[in-house]
Amino acid sequence: MSMQRDNGKHSLILDAAIVEIACSGYHYTTVARIARRAGVADGTIYLYFKSKQDVLVAVFDRAMDRFISQGILEMNPGDDAVTRISDIVRLHLEQVGENRDLAVILQVELRHSLNFLDVFSRTRLRDYLEIITGVVVQGQNEGVFRPDMDPLLTARMIFGVLDQMATDWVLSKRDTPLATRADEVTAFVLGALKGVR
Image (tube, rainbow, N blue to C red; front, side, top):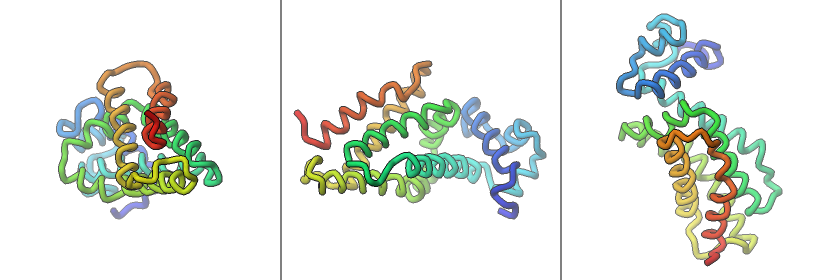
């Protein structure tokens, strides 16, 4: 990329891409349509991105950067593990649920490319899973979470629950805010972590 990321056009292009991809699907969205929605020339997009797939990766990276940085700001490292798991669930559902177009991309469109899924699993998702894993280990050390559960596997399962809730919400096209389910999801996750039957 030859232009600086902090340029306003970079964000403008990503915002336009979110709307276009959510409305038309990744495969039917063209660079020309993204450019038109962003109000820039087609060639301008190539100053910031090598390809349409690079735009999609940048949309994902920006969303994960915001999600992780917001989570770090809102989660107090001094809180107990139960509180931190509750915060993770609430933040995940709030942030995915605040922009349906972005949620469509994160929950549906990104899943169509095996190449992207490979990149996805090696980048910011790994960082997110490390945060959840750390909270699971904390809960095990505090004696409130089951000690027999592998922390990374458990983090993946927690992510899977949150991911499925978001996918169900996107596909259902419900107007109900996704975050309204946070208490139920938290109770389920904590029940599994504590071994409640």
